[in-house]
Length: 401
Image 1 (spheres, rainbow, N blue to C red):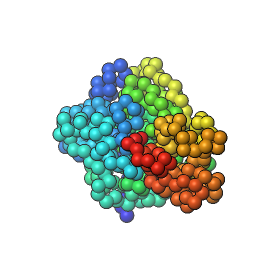
Image 2 (spheres, one colour; image 1 turned 45 degrees about the horizontal axis):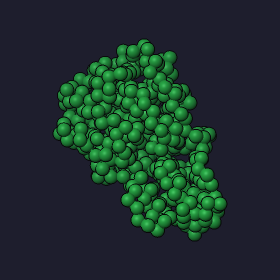
Image 3 (cartoon, helix red, strand yellow; image 1 turned 90 degrees about the horizontal axis):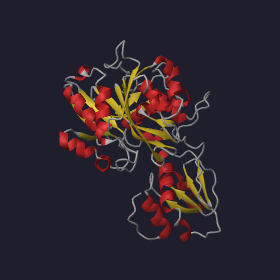
Image 4 (cartoon, rainbow, N blue to C red; image 1 turned 45 degrees about the vertical axis):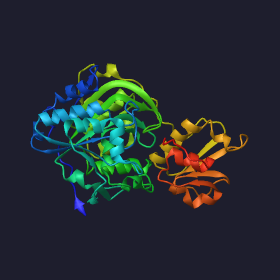
């Protein structure tokens, strides 16, 4: 097992350490170049720089699920102009082909045009890293490409998140964890002495050993409500950048109408001294940056959907299964009762924490396999919408949602 100590960002100085830069009104490419123009990128000269966007799902541009390709394009150009050797990498959620995800969101075309390497970070074996002061985890399996680059740049989308409140620069580093080891962070037991969800504590543990050297947060279009992939698009038109990922996340939270101190993984990490989230201690440029803020709808307290006669049983599920069910219901909710009696409540179960379920429950995902005799079981981690509909209807479907 290797040790990995978080390094001080080479882009952080006494004058810029807790500085965050915001740009709006120029479009995603120019907004990104503008914020980066405030940061001395010369420490990246001759270094191997890994750009880590959010491209973990197959989604179209403008869906607010993946990072805007033009933000990534500007980052490639800026770091190359500074003399860096730039690559783009991602480790997607289970069941997603990352190269297909790159193609769908437009990042692959950007990379081809610039002859910039695209990396499937799951293609090689992961490396076990010790987490010395971990509260929820004491070991993480990290993609080897992360360790073989000199600098890591986190380029997330501004999104609300059903489990973690928001997903921004700090949380985006979870996509540096190898393959299905990411799922384990959703399956941890409660941490004694803490009321917060174990995943939020685990993300803080991760930040204790793995932090980006620079954060570029894409707020071109964000996602409100049921993020990370089943929420509603919220146009914002901003890009945020800073050397301290916690400070950058704090500013992004405020732009989304959220108090960063109320985001557990940020608050826990700040208490541990990993970064600054107190907006009074952060210098933000320009001074009128809060004029661009919009209030994003918060995630619901629990997973409940306003579909007539549908009840969702959710115990210890991950966001991948939650998003699958939500997207499936949005797309097929009006068709479901072609296959189920209209006067009977449809029960849907996700997650591995169920002790018992009602007879006739639609059990979705491998975590519910032990209850397959209770009703209809759809295997997968997670299954896609077409597999759920095919199991229910008995007919093949072209739908891949």
